[in-house]
Image (cartoon, rainbow, N blue to C red; front, side, top):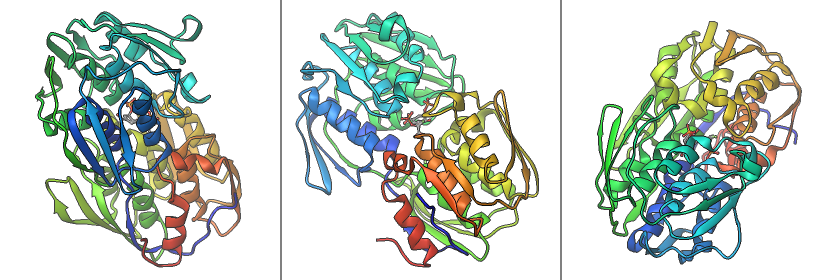
Length: 429
Ligand code: SPQ
């Protein structure tokens, strides 16, 4: 696909719904007693993987094109799927469902696409096995298809997490909610807390003190009305575009500002971006953000901020190509086990269009500012790499063509429409 060109970007975009919260709204709705309605559900492929998986497990879920209605079955009401469940590209779906299915008294097989079938699952399989479930990967590996033989009598666990991961934490929490007794999870670094927030929203209880999470099972939830805020990880592409494109001013409405996700705001602020936040909605954790063309300076990004911006690192690398000086990204080895190896994919694809960027064992080193040029690049099937490359393409008046552009549909189906809207200086629906 030939990527969109623009001289500047202007206008307002309503950021698409949060992917992490959309997944969890289906999960909690299915596991609650009674009806849950989900407004502003993300209509991306990953979230439909979660929705279809629960339908296969016997949960009635209706979609009228606007609102999702879930007839919750409770933790004890799930039914065995008639066949193996296709999870597509979604790491969040497969890992969190492993935690849910660990406490069920039946067997389930889940598999994904080529990318998901290469992502590591031991990080979830090991603690869930310790709690009493049986999990097996393909041909004695840790890779999907994963066969889960659940155990309706799970043991609680005390677990020191070896990686900073909301997916691992959430999988253990879902199993702990079904176990008899108190589980304690100690995070390596604090990661996104949407699972914990939603437990409270659905009438359950969980405590967090620093990096220690305590949850006692079994628990029961009541159906709720969920309004999903916009996804700051999707907003990040336009926050970056607004800062690095000349003569630009972008307004992003309904941006999720849960503090476990706002590392990108901290980075933009430290690099000197001309940005302001207004209309904060405390209950919905959302705000409007304005961003304008900015003079940026390179910085070092490392340590406990990394989980707060892990999915934004490819677009932050692009941001850094336009900043004065050197930006160093460290402590981000987790990027190697995302939809692609995002350290290599970011460095190699940006190098093709002129960026001065070097991959390291745990991150990237980027020198700027650099004038990018045209070329032929690939998303490698990774939505975040594809969207980052479209924003990069706006910086050159030469042609940039992108292979596997359709990957963006995983988290942001109308991404290219929003780029065109801003390139024409308009306002999105
Ligand atoms: O679901 P998936 O494919 O793992 O999605 C990604 C993404 O870029 O959209 C990662 F590839 O986001 C993860 C994120 O990196 C979503 C997530 C969640 O909703 O809990 C947590 C993070 O993953 P992890 O492994 O750090 O827990």
